[in-house]
Image (tube, rainbow, N blue to C red):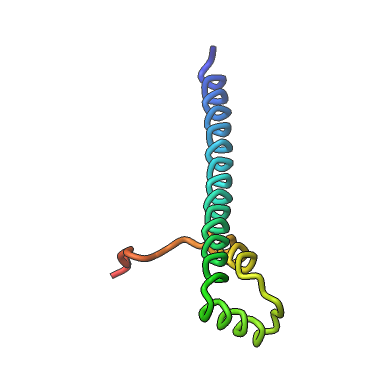
Length: 96
């Protein structure tokens, strides 16, 4: 085996490992977004059953143009979208 064939084999292995790492990252992002949707749906369902607060939120969405809002569905939607955003709470700014 020559030096060149060992380099090609190492490059192929590195490429496969890189592709696997990217796929795991994509799956992780989707799982975080799905978990956010689950938490949002549970929170919306709980909010829907609180008499005064639930009605107030439904009226607020009605003023935004969303009539007959199902808070569990809205919570799941907003939770799914929010699952794609990374939290920066507690991180230090390294620039200065």
